[in-house]
Length: 115
Length: 167
Image (cartoon, rainbow over all chains, first blue to last red; front, top):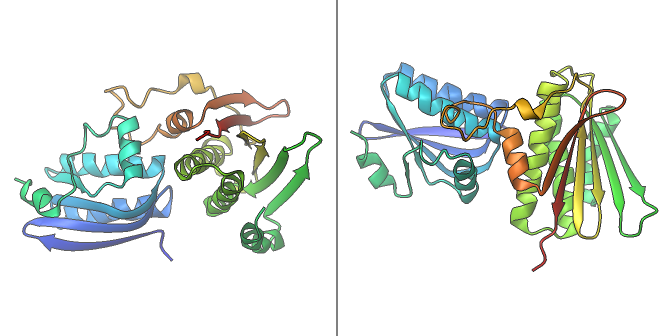
């Protein structure tokens, strides 16, 4: 079974990626990277990562969130976070990454925040 | 060691890929559990299972237990990727020493060693968007003591200690 399951769904011109499972070194990180890359290749540049069902993240997973953010920016897009778990929030806080990511607890507010 | 972890490990034992030793110590209330894995990412979850079992048995609070699990995970990943350079035949040795009020974990690789003082600060604004370089920072944040050294017979050793919180 895959470490990370990713399902995408549209919300207007925003694409929400619902992630469940682990974003860790190896498979999970690679899956996230490929999913974001695929959306960018399809011209879908408004990406919202729903992290509510992510059970575990390591430093590699946090690094992959950063990479996804920078890759999306470099392609003229925007990537934001939805429903951070407490653990992800703590990991982002400790490494001062909360200042980097725009993050939401409410999906409709997150979707309407995209320009 | 719980029956659950023992069950998880049986298949790996059969393949000769993991060795697990439980030692009674001369010190009262002290126990040592040793685990060796080949340098393959697929075995990292097995180390996590043992870590969970040890912290649960010791009665660590759930949040502390999850951070200890992450710190051990990061140390083992570093040993595999940076120490042993993913050479599968090189071992990573993990030793848990449980005492009444604390857990000490040693993770050893068989690589060339490295100088942790040379690591850039991941919270520096110039490094914030680096995709890597946070593992040791998390280990130092979540454990009470983290110390890197060179093993006399070669390779690196990281020693991490976490004291149980008294409620």
